[in-house]
Amino acid sequence: MIGNLHLRCGGKILSLILLCVAMSGVTARAAGVLDHVPDTALAVIVVNDMEKGSEKVDQLAGQLMLPSPSLLNLLTGQTNIEKGLDRDGAAAAIVFAPREGRSNPRGLLLLPTDDYDALIAQLDPEDEEGDRTPVTLADKSMVAAKVGSYAALVEPEDEALLDDVLAGKTSVGSQTGKMAKWLDAQDAYALATNSGIAMASEKILEAMGEAQEQLENFGDEQQAETIKMAFGMYADLFKTAKSELALAAMGVRSEAKGLHLTSRMAFKPGSAAAKYAASVAAPKQKLLAGLPSGDFVFAGGAEVSIEAIEGLYTWSAKMMRAMPGGKDLKQEDVDALMKLSAESMAGLKSASFAMFVPEADEPLYSSIVAVMHVEDAESFMSSYAKSIKAMNALAKKAKSPFLTEGTVEETEIDGKAALEVTMKMPEAAVAGDPITGEMMKKLFGDAENIKVYIVAMDAKTVALGYVSPDAVRRAMKSAGKKGIAANANVMKAAELLPEGCQVISFLSPKGAIGMVMNIVPGIEFSPVPALVGDFPDTPPIGFGIKVTADGVETDMVYPEETLEAIGAAIARSRAVSIGTP
Image 1: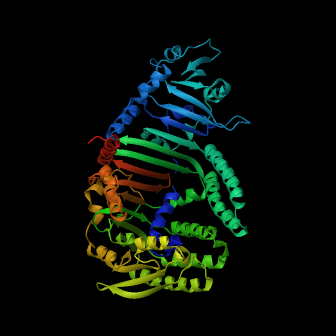
Image 2: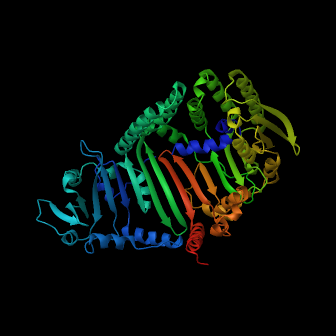
Image 3: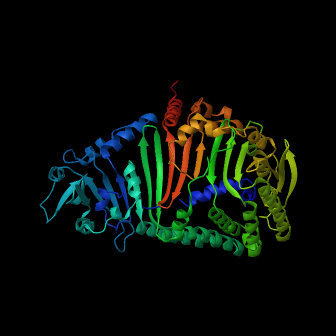
């Protein structure tokens, strides 16, 4: 219900960004350890440099004020491996499909070695059997074999896995293409092959089917139909992953300026997703342009494409039909709504928005400002007004709880052409529920209506705000100025993201804490203020999505100063918990 209102108003911007996230490619070669990972593997977890990786974990633990034992020393101590281990090499844990009749996957460990014989001699080796040696690793029976500059270890019952590894057949390393450079840049990563993605999708679909069957038995026929549609929508996602994805990886990389949590996905050649990725261009303008400066909680921006909008509305239509009562909507009405929604966004090229720290007595949405860069502001405003009026007529005709009536009036804000849109809150959202009504007031200032203001700031820029005209006035006053984009802390975080991202966003820890402290009643009497203290104005946590013909990359970065501030807060929390001053 609220999601539908977002679709029709400024929340479309949020949804567009979420769509890009949902669409998160392949193409130098991951040399080394991946060359010894057979393409029959489901997944592999790799630490690219054990020594440096251990040091970085220790450094990160220090920043966060956490205990920091050397992981590598802990590992070697528990396994009794002191000699022969190449501490600067890459280690890998390979996951294979379960044996027939079993559910648990099989595993094989690759340890880098500069002296295989010395390494094996520490593991209570038994007599060699050809190219294999029974050993004991951490009180567990294993079978070892030399594979290039690695020691491969596997449980005796899974010894057959060594056949493919020793044979040196087609490897995962030969399939990574241009993703190899990204993989080599990570401190550690987990990589899923297409076989692994397919098996995981099948397992998830199987579990969803069982859950769906159980839930359907608890409701009436209408509820069962709703559940069926909802599960079917998510099942389509996993089916798409199975058919479209070639490789998927998640990585972690620690650098002097911050910690990166990253991902990379590669689509199958010729797939619909691959064709879409190849069509996405680099951003043509600064994605935060037009956003005013100030203490913010969240800020972000995204390039917009026709394909993204179409995908968004297709997904939104499925969401509407899957919600309780959605099956009562006629398909023709849903199609009409999606068409009108698309028309309301005609000419949109990019969008950015920010949530600022609200005052204690202000509705939360009053602090949101959105700026849209369009081909022609006058045409955009006209199309938007027409689409809202048409949606209003459709709502009266369909009489659905998901389609609410509203009004749109032409007005002026500080001499600029503007629209005042009033959307009625869906009756199902507040009827007979005073708690929900109060929540709506805290969000929008009114339990029955949502006010949206849209103003043409210039020939190619439109601003949007909620509750009152004050939000768009904030954007109008900053027109022509650098705003949030020139914030020194935002710039520090932005420069850590991949160059050329089509989607970027930033979360300010200080702003988020300030928002919570202002809007949560009685929080000043809780332990929270003592725990967070006066959180410094650090660079925000940054997130970016980059789509190219080679694939899709995401990066969430925690700048160094931010990690240290979080560590100080953790230290205060620990001090409070043990009662120290």
